[in-house]
Length: 77
Image 1 (cartoon, rainbow, N blue to C red):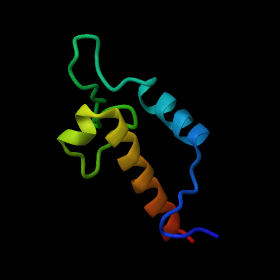
Image 2 (image 1 turned 30 degrees about the vertical axis):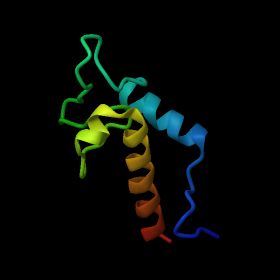
Image 3 (image 1 turned 60 degrees about the vertical axis):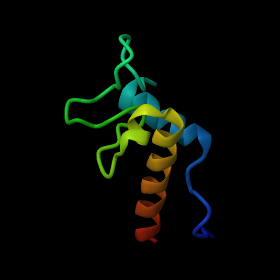
């Protein structure tokens, strides 16, 4: 059973998502943030609610994506 403080996604899940979304890129070779075609940002290609922290910090990018994914999965339960 899921609680509000747990995530149904483990590290392997998040790695697969990051590989699919950005090939593990938070930044381009020139040091600027990696944006997808639609303006999605960073490793997890965040498009909803992104802030400067999500764009410049790979840790915050992954944490925010995990929170979005967890909330989305909890809504389906």
